[in-house]
Length: 132
Image 1 (cartoon, rainbow, N blue to C red):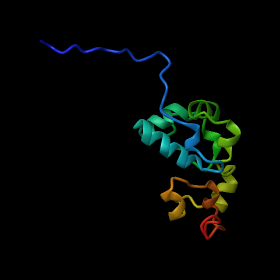
Image 2: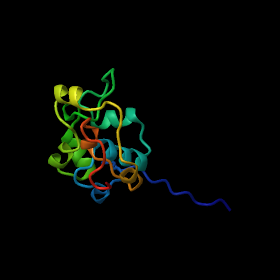
Image 3: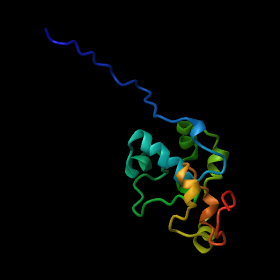
Image 4: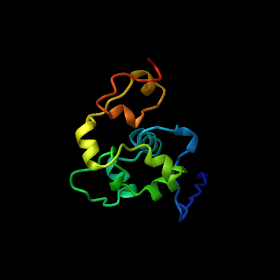
């Protein structure tokens, strides 16, 4: 006797795995997207297709500036207000390029518990305010 296999069609309005309680106020967009992509097994290219204003952007997108990201879509999928998401970025192109590190900077203790603050990218920050 062959086992019965039930095929379930994917719903038209496919949703992703996410919970707003996975995010903390002040958390960087990088960390929010890292958690989201890990839980949904999405590549960077797939994240860009979902959330970038111009998904085919040749140079890739930075996570320091909000202007390249669709905050409405990002907020809708992550279940967060656009204002909370906006705080996960650092500012405009001039501010970011002159005063922030382009390489990821982080506190080992914060990262170990799944938290990264966008403000840690500022070059003037030398140590974490929460763990020091």
